[in-house]
Image (tube, rainbow, N blue to C red; front, side, top):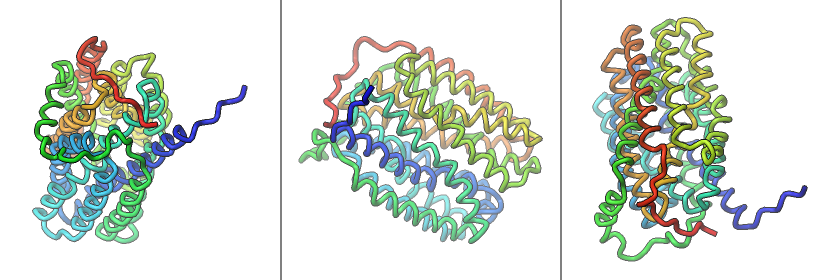
Length: 414
């Protein structure tokens, strides 16, 4: 049977997905995954202190969450493309400044005040807003699956790439290379994305910025906040132990380069679930799938907490890699199922604040518990317990779609 050819508008939408995935691969790789290598003692952690880099990264995530609330409003009112390009330029500047830091306080300021806003403008949330405009509700699970499949190689590319650059040039030059990559890709790709006409910038919208932000808050429900708080806790848990994974295994005598290459494989292992789970969420229920993923992340944390041999490291890589890549797209689909519409950017921006708070709290909390072998084991086990509880709350809070309060969907971009 012949497969119907895609119309020009459909091809354009799917090309947008490919370009958005390229953008996200680069922004996440340069501004997030690279720091699992940079935090180690052989990189920036040795010059500025592991605790300093972890604290600065946590503060950057915290600031990105606060900024994401405004990013959601801007995306709703003015569109995402220009904001993404500006964020990429700002992120490249943040990396260049970080490479020049000689004192711990300088690194913390740069990461918090420059890198944080760049994260908000270049991570998934602005793209999620575009995805909701490019595709009708029935097509979104497949579109989210393709997006996360194509953007799932970021950790696979940037973790070993950062390690290789550090070994070849030193960490400061390595960070400059990352800045150049982010600038090249992040500033060019948004120019090729299409922005739906119904979301073109409108005159005088800036005067109603605060009013529009409040309107987004009013559109939420108690279930939304229960879900968001549970996902905050889950994010803190798995971000905490995944950020410290290389450093934790370093304390157990594992060779750092080998661990970095093993962790990089999680990106490849995550590809099937990245595509399949969003795709089947319409049948199985996105909240149930998300809860299952969080429970498996708890299992991976327990495995990691006692890893003393390479087979245990590979078991962690298999379990963690299988599900971690599907967590964020499933979270966005849960929100999209219940709150898609003209306020979605504000809704997803508000939730991005709780996500960023979790991503900021997790690495810092693990560091406070302890960065020696015993401290890491305790921190990872606590994270596993938090994930189990969060999984249950996520499923209970979002297991049914509300019959009222759901916004009418705007027409998808043609």
